[in-house]
Length: 284
Ligand SMILES: Nc1ncnc2c1ncn2[C@@H]1O[C@H](COP(=O)(O)OP(=O)(O)O)[C@@H](O)[C@H]1O
Ligand SMILES: [Mg+2]
Image (cartoon, rainbow, N blue to C red; front, side):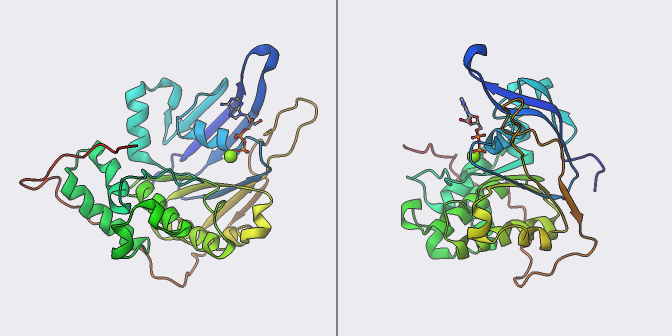
């Protein structure tokens, strides 16, 4: 395991809009996330949580400061290099799932593999393995997103984030649209990834969902190394996320034991097979 931190934010600020009407979403945020940590970020709606994840994912750029992921400063990367880092290093789980509606569950998960060079048939085989590990059964794998429950859709979204074997998983309110029991199950999946595969997980959730899903601090209680960071309103600057690091660090020396068996890392499948078609384009 490398000593390079998974993520470093150095005095990061992000404003939207013109100077006269600027909205400050993040103000002077410094944060260091060691590899294999489970970082849970809680805060009210509008406090800058999604902005923070988007900056770490390289989907947006900071107004000031530096974002370093896996030892690479994002502003120094070309667009292609940043896309490549995102594809191979980062798995992003969205609150709204963001699945292609005309693709089956399996095709949705197979889709990113086309960009790392797998042919379509091989990609679908790998997708099926990953979905199985996420607890999505064979029947559900061939259904369209609209034919799946919210919990199944989120498991598909997590499988899609994991299928390229990233080291860092960013989850933006992954249980936000789910009932409390399903939400807990999704959080259990993220915890397993952290404790058993040593993936770094950064998960944000709104403060109010804490009571609804029971996700924190119970999720922290079972993580191998968990930090919770709570943004605190800064009335002086108007900034929504003046959090400057970890507020509550609770390293856990012993590994957690979860009820369900550990998911195995997907076996490598051949890059292509004869007659294997190329990746199809999704239709809106
Ligand atoms: N693209 C954008 N343009 C203008 N303002 C934005 C944009 N994205 C976010 N904001 C503003 O930045 C603040 C933080 O937003 P966000 O990061 O989405 O908060 P959270 O995820 O904590 O709810 C909010 O006031 C929001 O309205
Ligand atoms: Mg948000």
